[in-house]
Image (tube, rainbow, N blue to C red; front, side, top):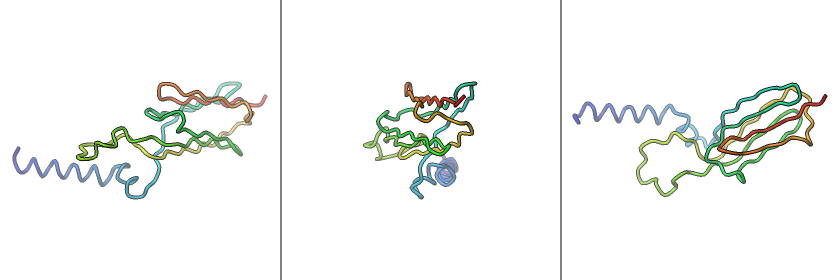
Length: 127
């Protein structure tokens, strides 16, 4: 590898570090935001939350005043591997997502199921 290519790799790494969400999170201590899909059926709202690698016991789900809040924590995949980091694109640490639900929900019948890294939340609508 020549010197020009070596500098190019270092510049690319610095750009990645400076402008990625991961760098922002490391500096500010912010949470990461999981992706969601939301569907509406005649009788319910379905929310799917992408949470691969998260333990079921590390997920907290609340619904209040028309807002669904999904929060929790994803552990580092290899906490002992930080001797030399080549790339880290999968977020770890705290996550948080607040979603306004614009329907009259029957709060005491909300159901959630977590399988294969996807959290499925069923929010039954009132008549």
